[in-house]
Amino acid sequence: MTTSFETFLLLAPELVLFLAALIAFLGSAFTGLRAGWLVAVSGLGIALILSGGQPSGGATITSGPVTLDGFSAFIRMLTFTAGLVLSLVQAGDRFRSAVQTDSGRLQRHGSGEEAGTFLILLAGLSIVGLANDLVLLFVGLELVSIPTYILLSLKRSDAAGQEASLKYFYLSLIASALFLYSVVCLYGLGGSTSLAAIGSQLRALGTGLVPGTNVAVVGTITPSMAAVLLPVTLGMALAGAAFRMAAVPMHFYAPDVYQGTSPGNAAVLSTLPKVAGVVVLARVFALAVPPLGNGSPVGPVAETLLTELWHLVAVVAAITMTVGNCMALMQNNLRRLLACSSIAHAGYLLVGIAAAAAASTAVGPMGEPTASLDGLGATLFYLATYLAATIGIFGGLTYLGHRWPEWSATSQQRPPLEEIETVDDLNGLASTNPVVAFSLAAFLLSLAGIPPFPGFWGKLSLVTSALSVDSGAAIFGDRQSWLIGLTVVLVLNAAIAAGYYLRLITAMYFKTTDKGTQADGGLSAGLAMVVCLLVVLSFSLRPRGLFTAASQAGSTLSGAIVTDMNLISGNQPGSTHLLAHDSPAPAQSTEEPR
Image (cartoon, rainbow, N blue to C red):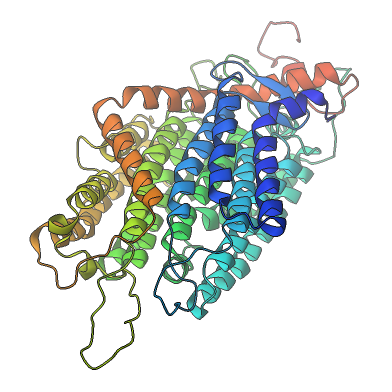
């Protein structure tokens, strides 16, 4: 793939973020700039404006390793919007790192370094959504992981903070290595780093079709070899995505890391990496999905990939949501409870991916594939509603800051600040901070899936997409039975989750407080909470707009890959990629080869 000036034009919003990060870094190092988060908000605002002027929806533009279509545009807008609100949360995160000054005032240091690092993280996440090449996809994921290590280290310099950063660092290395091995296997299967070429090769393996004379097949992978590599590839790719989503079996780091870091960093960890995990699984799933309306057959290798993927994802989804909710029931620390909640929601997100992959294994009366991406659209819709509610909760906790100190009559020293850490610290919040209590209650009800909040519409869309999958041959029973069972597990877990969410609401509204809260967090965190509240309320009343956008984004994922390859093959004569549309028609068809 060749990179041209058009490639940089497509990446203009990401380049703006890199430029804003550079300004924040240099300004902090040489001019003493302390308004780093203002630079971040300004950069994200410009990036959002540039993103709105680029094609989206049904339009597809490809240049080199970058593709801008409905799916990538949705991920980009979701990333920048969430990043803008998270910047406000981070700017209001006024928690001391290790020691307290004699005056007791909260001070903020290193905001330039934190803001610049956060902007690089957002740029990397957006690149993950735009990448149609394995190399760029892996680079984007590392641009998400490495800045996260730095953020965790910068925000907290005490023992708990450093322990949290080291735990995340070492486990992230393992996850990155596993995903890199899966990338190597995908390259071996497809003979190219292009996702479109890999998908075409996988779908053609085992069909007995001879490629057109103008296209050469790269590699000598046979269906039997692919059958051995596929389970290994899927397992390692799922492990890499599971770490970022905090899904089983890569979930165990979350409670300790969330408790040890700051509320602002916990908000980042519980949201942005999940977007990267969803994109990775969607890209892997789309490799085996034929272009809609193309008419090209799908070989046994691609069918095996889809079958193994949805079985594996369905099992992981059921275990993840159950483990996360059961762990949350036993927590009293707020951040540990929200970490377990984040694990459970990773399981919910996987339900839609499993439904989409299972539906894509169905065939029509003439043996043609009948891909259905409703599950992917449901996952994207639920992801957006989850981000709004989760960022709002952490924004509210950041704004509340600390409990009122207990003064001693015998001591002349100022008592140390105590962070809001436990569920009991929220007792009586409705009487002392009614706006914050109402906002937190709305977010918690949305996460619990109580109607008419957007979390309910998100869970309903996941259930609908899973139940719409018809019966078919499967390894252990038919598809419909598997998805019905997964739906039952989802509904039961939603009921379990309501127990600990309602426990928080009970503490705020039906218990009396002993100390109360100081609400000494930054005003920007309170503003972020209010913005999230408005978004949640608007989605509660009118969810159709978001659902339509998410459905369109999910439906364009598969078709965009074929368009990418059309453009790539047209720009690069003599390409060595195997294209599905360049293959002759099946033997039973009377059509001329295209």
